[in-house]
Image 1 (cartoon, rainbow, N blue to C red):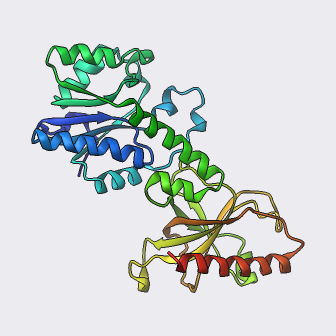
Image 2 (image 1 turned 45 degrees about the vertical axis):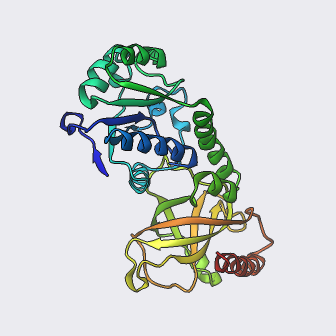
Image 3 (image 1 turned 135 degrees about the horizontal axis):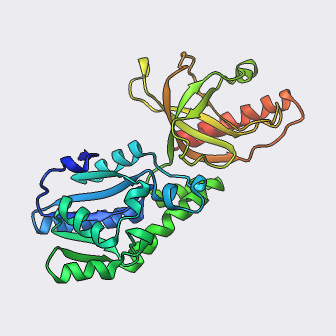
Length: 316
């Protein structure tokens, strides 16, 4: 897949079959849209083109930009779309200036000028241009004048895609890992930089990698304890294997309860990985975070959590 970030340097697409969207999560709802895109491209010997925006448009024109929590960072989205078999991904900077262009200018001076699409596949409720005044009906007028073909994404398909993104976020914020995985079509994951913590876990016999997310827009799942797998950016002697572990997200009420942290105990692992970025994949929700009577009670529970995690991860 070719990724294009400069609108002035786009290639001449061959019979471009174009769709537009944020594609956050690249989940099973999106997979149906992508399948339709690829099917039509095959029929006309064309290329699949996805147009997306960064940052998320709601960060620029939304009423609560700080509330945008994304299922994918841009690099993650790029990787997932490449795995889906898309030919071209065009990433357009979404700016206030871009948002206020008149709808006709958006179609004529942007879509047609730079993409010259053979066909645009889009939802009936797609809005664009200043005050989101552009709509499917405007695109239809261009299609009727043979500027490009126009295919409407079926309402049920579009609704499933929209609801899935919302439901996935809700599921993760409630700790429902299984539902999130079912809707995504893969297990939710995130990257984190390993930073120095207070090293309390080491004194308890459960040393942890304290993580700082690499993108502050990435959704952090609900507080609690999870069984996870871990992939290292520098795998050292572990090859490309996924290591097993357990993760706690929360304020550690037994210890201090002051700030929210993400910490991962990687089983049978003692290498120094400070400063590395690791990828954590959620496999199972174990329990909610809770306050124990003391460190001994906490240590006893951690032993149970580890045994449960190993049992669940070995069954995968």
